Image (cartoon, rainbow, N blue to C red; front, side):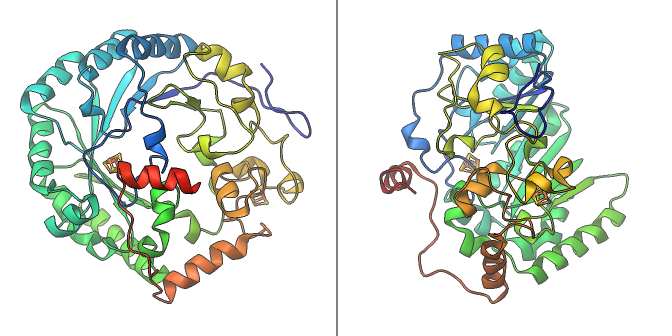
Length: 381
Ligand code: SF4
Ligand code: SF4
């Protein structure tokens, strides 16, 4: 099947391999770097259990082999066990991305019995103070108990910590904590500046020096923990010399379904103007994946304009991230401003320079909550 909008080169479209089911935007935490859209409060009409079961079946028939359940906090849905069981029965490799809030020994056992293959548990920091401050909840001790529940059920311990200026100096202690909890994998994912993290960018962006030190500390621990724990350090785009191949290519591998049923090539794509993304209530997954304008618009390289259109690296990064291009260059078809060849690269350089100079915005941190989401939606932010 041929996708793309004409022009230089059209993309041969294969099936999605990953189905990401964002089953709810509700969450008891209020993380300042939350990746949910800032207007999540406008999308509270969640798909029913039967609708999600249909989505799982259509995704598997289309060829998806991995199914991630995320949110918000997916444990807030009491049909999670039923959805996992159906995904397992259909033959997906299943994954739950959770803050751990809402997991009890009984639910852990039920999810295990339903066939859940893998849980990724997020922490905010190695200290109770910063963990609880960043999430605006008292959840540090609870997360540690959840870590023990995961081990008791025999799941591999996979931990994720979003890194930024407020916790990056704790990198060594975070790795130590993960090791003490028995983690086999730890992802230190530096905050990328989308959604709530973009609102809070001036508070969250580390300096280049802090990043360098954190990477060096991670490298030291890699040697110490060789064979015991795998460490992944994901750098922030703004500090990288070149853009990333976002989502491994638009409409190439990932199919995300939002809580209210919109089908997206990535979880932030709904912000892009001039694009409509069908919902699973309007269209089956096969039609929306192969035939909808939302999925075809930025597939391949045919949509590119200069400098990407004539760039020898266009296949390597596919022009970077469309959402970042829209947020920073106000044009979703522009080169990702993280790229030094982008005419808007100065915006990224200015943000890094402000962080390096220790500038902190006068506006306080915004915590992710419903009231703030409604306020941001009204202000068009
Ligand atoms: S980042 Fe924090 S607030 Fe956002 S969904 Fe995850 S746990 Fe909830
Ligand atoms: S100009 Fe475009 S294709 Fe070339 S490296 Fe930059 S973002 Fe990638």
